[in-house]
Image (cartoon, rainbow, N blue to C red; front, side, top):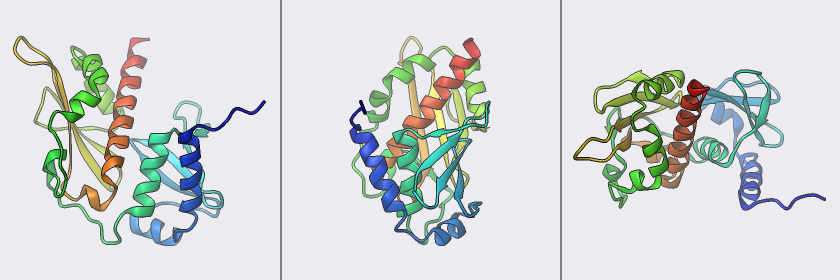
Length: 211
């Protein structure tokens, strides 16, 4: 008996069909993406993805086995959004800001920490492990925070991940800094999909170290 599709699967299917309505040549040229007759390839948080040019379906390559698997919701929606809905003239400002500093948004500075509380608790007291996990994702060390790395979300779209460990006075805190022009690349809600995926990847890399 076939299981009913979840809302996430339905949304992914709808976005795959929507992807096919866009000019793929313009996409590949805009972001300098490699492609062949069957697939468009893009790197997202240090992993290689391919988009089927006939079906719009996205797969990710497992680094250990080189096998391809279906993407989860956060991965797929992040890729579809930047390829389909980024502005034609999108470009980086070179200035990193917090979400609550983005123009035209209303945002509470504590929201990210509250949403991702489980990760904040998991990362606390894992100084070396978290640093190694950031480096596994290709991170480049930054200055602000107990742990701070610049990460390539996409090769053309960086972010800065920052983490402060808890002490006697303050709880642990995590923060992402984004290019000031991030909303020219993705919708506001997609930023949360991308943050969720980065944190998921960091947790997985730390758990691998614990085996």
